[in-house]
Amino acid sequence: MNEFDSIRDGLAAAMMEVEHNLMPMIDAMHRMRCELVSRGWSVDGAERAATAWFSTLMAVGRQ
Image (tube, rainbow, N blue to C red; front, side):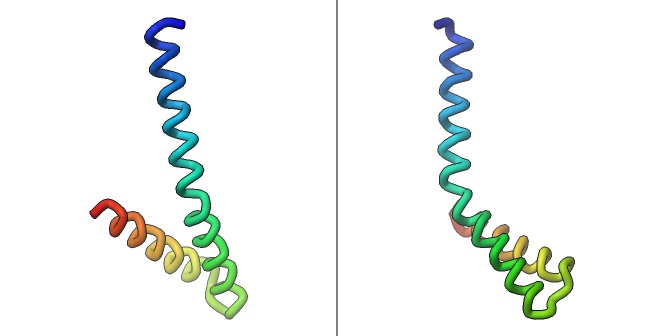
C-alpha cells in the first residue's frame, strides 16, 4: 500500500463516520418536513423550516 492508498482509506473512513453521525439528524429533518406537510404546510414552507432547523443545529454544534 502506498501513501495515496493510505490517505484515500483514511478519507473514506472519515466520510463514513460523518455520514454515520449526521444520518439521525438528517432523518429527523426529513420527518419534521413530512410532519409539517401533513399538518397543512406547503412543501416549500416545510422544507424551509426543516432546513433552518438543521442549519441552526449544525451552527450550534460548531461552537
